[in-house]
Image 1 (spheres, helix red, strand yellow):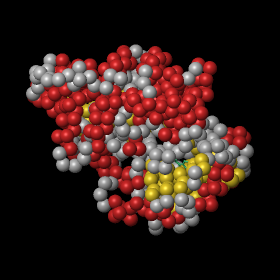
Image 2 (cartoon, rainbow, N blue to C red):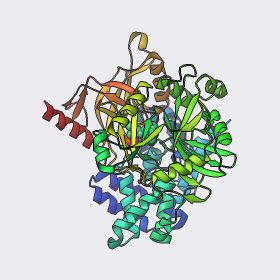
Image 3 (cartoon, helix red, strand yellow):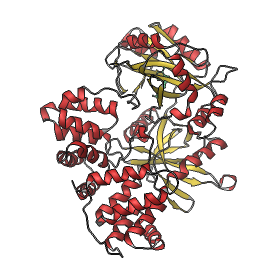
Image 4 (spheres, rainbow, N blue to C red):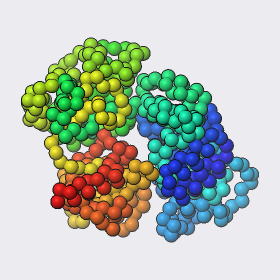
Length: 563
Ligand code: AMP
């Protein structure tokens, strides 16, 4: 299939806003390919080249893209920079330069979907000396054979700026629409979701759906070394409410740390976060303890690791854990300075057997049998099994007095179901309405803060289109150390600078508290948070998990009622 075909689709998707319209367009496109090409087509249709757990990025900043455009088109760099200021979009610049190219091409070739996908992957794999030049020449090579529209989208893919309003739900529905009869719709949706949650790759899922149908999707099993989506809890109004509904529950501490999904295959260990990022390198101490204290050849288990102060046995501030997650050198040293305690609470897979449909109470037992607890280092999550409200309240107070976040109440009969669902896990924690938002822009401070990006423009997400909509700016809540860390994290994400302000790629998620939500024409969501404050940097959340426009609207309305 020609790459041009998918570019025409991008253009259409950009123009239409209806969810069903987008789904139909994509379904028709997916029908045209098969096998490996289908896989690449599906991934490219969301601009995805590497999957999150591959821990790879294309690593091409706008400067390199400009040099590639220059090389392919004959425009000089200065000229390209001027065009960038004029258009504000390097995709458009590439389109213009290729349309008006100053050098002749000696032979012509049409780009295919497979070729573009493979070359882009290649770019992300170049490492070490000379890798920048190789990236530029590979991208220039692609641009060289592009027509103007292809050039526009190639550059947007490379810069991760393909704004076509296609979120996961639409891709899922498009796969269902493309490969299943309308009468099978519900079942197909369920199993496409099931397979995606395990494999994390819509390309692979589409391929199985097309060639092996629902039975193929059902057969999908976890692969060691490839993270699966995690189960989460929903907020409960009260302990009573949960007991009334489920009777006896497993109450566990809700630890204030980092969710770890741990895969073990003999001596090989992988650690993934809830965002499915591989953090194995950052936690050699956890790897060691898993090798030593988990008595299984192969397994996938889950728990929460939190930074423990060995003297008081209480948690150190969460930012200590942030330091561990971001540290790239002296890892052994920092793992001694900031040790973590691992608290295990679930098992998904053991020696070839999966437990998605095994009740939690049984999973807990299986888990218990393979864990050798070791003081301060590894244990099963602190828990009680009860329907006595008083007892659970005491347990909750103990969790809070030990500076943990609260408790989880888990239905002992619940299966392992990805995401948040009624009937499974519930969280009980002190009430404070907060929103998880993503940072899309930032401002350099003044005076002593001038070297830091210290004021942040943040956004929620439109759940249908994936579009990010701004709802305020925040500059309070962080320590000096954290401003520095934020600046370090945001700088490589800068897309464009306008005076003191920079636009950044939406990657960093923060939890903000606020006093009130107001209607506001100043932000694209139509709302503004008044007196926002950053409560914490949510290392564990990805942009797909932030709060939605719908929730913002609900919170706005509910405060109206209260007032
Ligand atoms: P939230 O984002 O508030 O829904 O919290 C979900 C997170 O709580 C999970 O991703 C875990 O990292 C964390 N957590 C801490 N303790 C537990 C526990 N005992 N069971 C499940 N999740 C837990």
